[in-house]
Length: 97
Image (cartoon, rainbow, N blue to C red; front, side, top):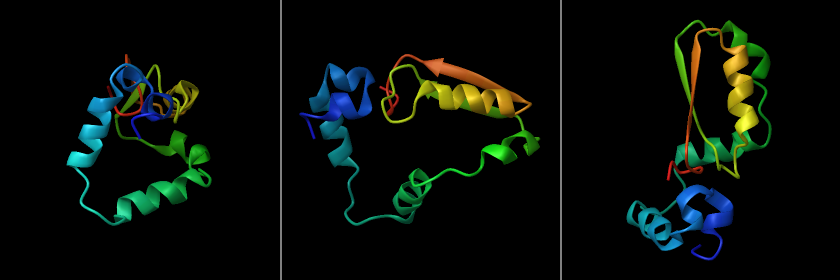
């Protein structure tokens, strides 16, 4: 994990991968949670794009400028399609570091 954390998560993980590994292991409770399974299923194919213009709620979209997992173009597309959205791009990677 420490060897690949920078390439996987970007941001400060490129500089201090040991901190990322420590943080990941401190929250590990064993087993696969339902949320993680849903994330894996979502990565197989995202079909919600056509429905984004139907959202009426104010929406804050957060995206890191160095996220190798989810490209910044995804956040920009969501911002264009969600009428009442605000896009905040933070300096960092996938984990917000």
